[in-house]
Amino acid sequence: MTWFDKRNKLTNDKQEKEKISCGLVLFDSVQDAIQAEKILTKNKNRCRLVAPPPELRKGCDLALEISLIEQAIIERLLEPKVPYIEITPLRGTTELLDVIKIYTYDGYTMVKAGNMKLTFEDVSGIIVNTSGGGCPDIPYLHMELVGHRLNEIPRPRHIGHTLCALMLDRAVEGALKIWEEGTV
Amino acid sequence: MLIIAGIVPALHIPLLTDVVSQGQDSIIVSGYSIPCGQGTAATVSVALAVTDYLGLDSPRVALAGDKGSGEGSQKVYQYLINNIEKLKPRVLALHYWMPNLDLMRMLYKNIEKCSPRPILIADAASMYTAKAAGLAPGFDIFTPDTSEMAFLADPEAFHPAYINKHLFKLDEDKIPELINLAYKHQGAAKILLVKGKRDIIADGGNILATIDSPNIPAMECIGGTGDTITGMCAALAYSGMSLDQAAIASAKVNRMAGLLAAVNPASSINAVIKQIPAALAQALNT
Image 1 (cartoon, chains in turn cyan, brown):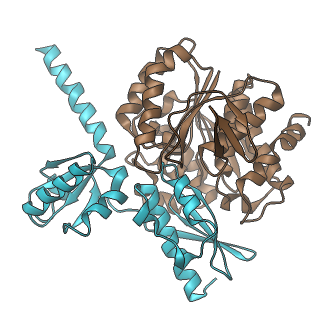
Image 2: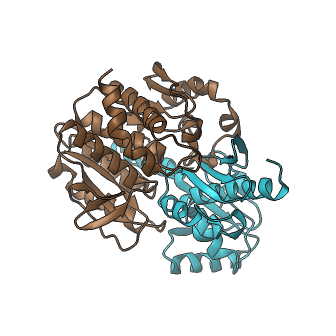
Image 3: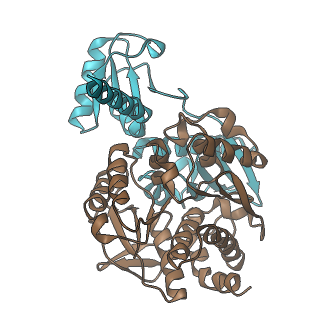
């Protein structure tokens, strides 16, 4: 009996730890949740239908548990097809970091959003560098963005897959606003 | 053996597990030429520059093409999980890849079976994964920047995109507080090299060194300047240098290379990489 209890405790501890990497997609209706599960499963994104914990519950009683790191691609897959309320982590801070920091250099501006940084030339709006991050789409996004004008690029959230891509998108958004308003 | 593992942003690159050689602004592995842009290729290129300079064996890599889907990352994890006990590297540096807690735990379990145990270095998403999986104290060196330091200090965070705003907003002079928090919450490797305006090297919460000169503010803009530090750390640790000295030397040499390259915010990482041997010569001969 002791062994049985210990094994269950270990299993529960492991499950608790795994939650750190999970997110929930919250929906207004059960039908939307089921439809979303079909879409993500077809695209081979890991997901499962769950009952959201009371503290995160909004809308209906069914949510979709996802791998949080894939938030960018999951938003892109669901947005045109299935309405959802929000995506939220199962543990910890529940909102994507929305603070940006701005640094100015001679002729250039760097915008920092979380772990991502984007630098553009003040006059032309050309992106001259991106740095930071660690997810596998970041070296690809660096190649796609550098050398192009801020208002002529594909947005990172439209071509990236991960949370780093979403943070880079926030940096692009901040940089675009600064450049278009000429507030450098 | 020094092994560097990660992904490169080209889908035609299969899983490559071979010794690397230097090309023209590129690295060459198994006949594939991979440009030394931001990311793991920059790390490998610098590690190779250091091993060449010191007359050591060239690094081996475990690389695969991945543009964000995680398929290449999975190949790299799986290769390491299956082969790490046979390979027995002296130093293993893990870099850009898709965070996967299960695969990281499987890899770590097999690393623990290696005798002697490899020196473990992690940067980028490998560092995020090690921390989120609760394995950070088992790693030897992490090389976070200041926002990643806030992530390591936040015990509930899975990724730097979801960190406590208060921690992100802290000024850079509060980094020692974040370092203490990270060690307290088991979110730090044995040694932390925190890259920033001032590079800080810490061991178990003690600040070992602070490096702030030469001061090259533009370095923070350039994609890959953190990757070069990781490559240097790995190669210097492989040379037998103590881990704290490897971290300190890497921070100094990176700044010196930036100075020699006369970088500005629009410079490419290749300009910095080309100056690494000269910067290394200056650092090791003073």
